[in-house]
Length: 344
Ligand code: DAH
Image 1 (cartoon, helix red, strand yellow):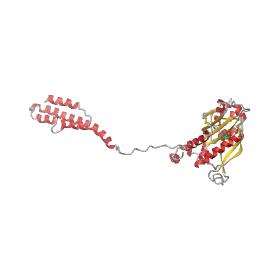
Image 2 (spheres, rainbow, N blue to C red):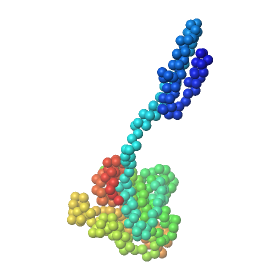
Image 3 (tube, helix red, strand yellow):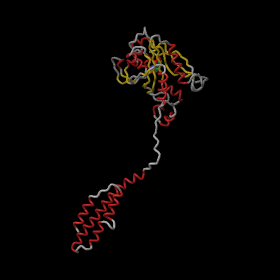
Image 4 (cartoon, helix red, strand yellow):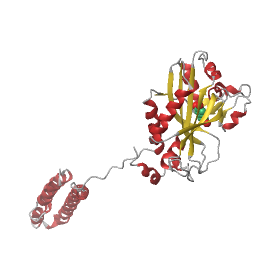
């Protein structure tokens, strides 16, 4: 009898099952009324009285072991079953949350597209720049008051040589310089990028924003060419009825310089609060590249001439989408960004 119990004990300890049905089969084999352990119980009656105590204990031990083992096997499959029960394979999939393009990206690509169709290619330059490329080669003298036009972030100040100062670029005109240093005309480039200025953040100013710079240098480039490109840009960007006007202005790197206005795209030029009842809104700066800039960048100003233009992407986006607070562009509030879902 003891030998039989021990054999069953070993069997029970080694039990394994591949699924819930197999566990049930084992339960029937060992623990049911007609199972192996109950059969032993029946034999117990015939055990001599003096052995009853020991055999009884071993038998109980076997039964507990078998119950525990089979319960453990059952548990393993039950917990899997619970998950399987949760799965509803007929359910439709969760919608994938598609992001939206940022309004500044939308406007930037639109600007690039318009200029690309006129033969401009994209050029890029570093945001961490030196004074030489941001100011000096663009004809800003060391003590020139024009340097005050941009409130620069300084990273590394060189007391001996101001042109070696490491700064965050305050305009994308620095990319003009890099492009002219590295290539001879014809140069026809558009440079989109982020720029930095040490400004207090408010609804109308930020310490960083985005610009697009344009440059065309070749033999015989004239102000007429510039005007033609600007008119085409304005009409493609704001509609075929858009008019432009150029007002004389000053930039150290262009001579002559101008600021361009477009007829107010909100009132159509009649006058409204947005254009301060003038019918015009300013959108960019431009001019003929100053010969001193061409020469500083290794291009012979007696042979070549060029025009340049620069605009703020936020400004154009404002005109298109009327965003009243500049800070919205950099706060990534999804409620704002979702408004541009349908754009482009
Ligand atoms: N760099 C000027 C600014 O940040 C914008 C600008 C004006 C760029 C005239 C030009 C230009 O290329 O010709 O205010």
